[in-house]
Amino acid sequence: MSNKNIDDYIQEGIYGPKETNPDERRVFLGSLRERVILVLKQSEVRGEKGLNELEKEMKNYPNAKLLINGDMNFRFFKPYRELARNANITYTSVNDQESTTEYGLVLTMDHAIDKEDIFLHENKTKEEKQEKKSWWQKLFG
Image (cartoon, rainbow, N blue to C red; front, side, top):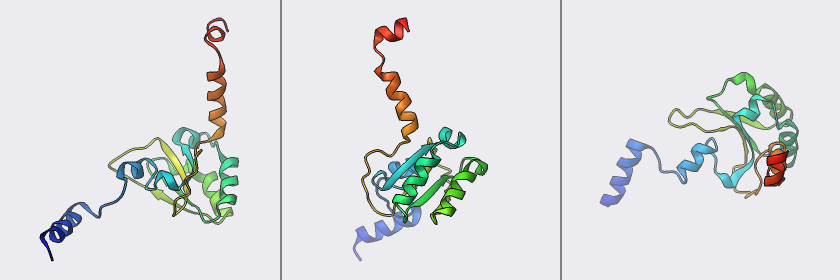
């Protein structure tokens, strides 16, 4: 064994195995952005939003996995867990004591799918409507 291999072995023993994009994994509850199908923010989960869209994506991706933010109260996830159970989708609670994320729920695959739009459409349409108003419309109503 060379010194580099021993140093790598010691570093892995102390800090754990090296992983790609650790910051991205912290944000998406252990998954990578390229694998994500749909993301719901914590506020959306508390408001039980996105159930229809989540159900549609579960039908489109039957081999998906649902990641649940373990820092949130488990009672908020009841409708999402039932949806996953009905679609035979496995779900896992992810607890990360070292970091926090604004996302409460992530539907993901075990391989890259590079889906462009992963956010809930309900909120996006409201934001787009607000952006379409001109400065004069905002000023004078």
